[in-house]
Length: 73
Image 1 (cartoon, rainbow, N blue to C red):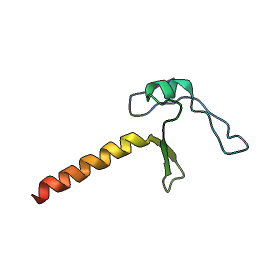
Image 2: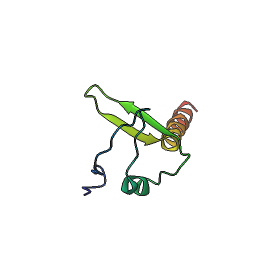
Image 3: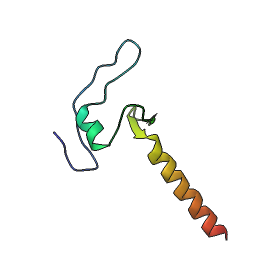
Image 4: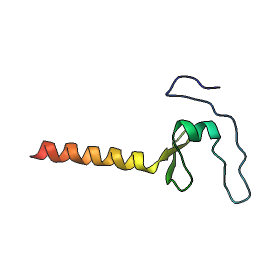
């Protein structure tokens, strides 16, 4: 069951003995997550854990740095 693009529900997962989870296939397909991809895991003060592809964070950081550089010159 999926909602709008900004929020989707993919089911539930169990944490294994080593702290591992399996990201549901539908979520992997929608976000193009492949074996070997690096992910960033972070949380907020409401105890919500979020997962993001590391390359998305890198692209965002590069855009911010580019904007800062353009504003200085």
